[in-house]
Length: 129
Image (cartoon, rainbow, N blue to C red; front, side, top):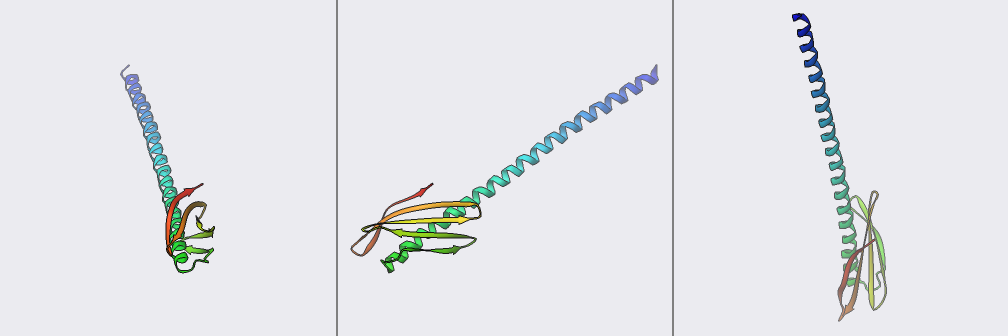
């Protein structure tokens, strides 16, 4: 009888070990998945913010160009790893549209300005869809 009790205890220990290992593997896998998803989300957020900065730099560039040349109508520029397409239209109210693109990300900024006493004055600056 002693022999069967030892085998039973040995089997219980094996079952307990297998259950513990299954839980440990599940928890570790879940932690790795959460970490990977978090890293991807952070990366996408960063790229979106960089694209927004590119679009904003287009508005800054357009304001500088317009101050020097009132006939400026826009251009496409390379900014860092992205591009910005600037479009200027309208008179006396000037509408500047700047589209920043980086990879699959695209952000658009629209600014409205007017020329008063030969000085450009921005009246609005907003991100558009």
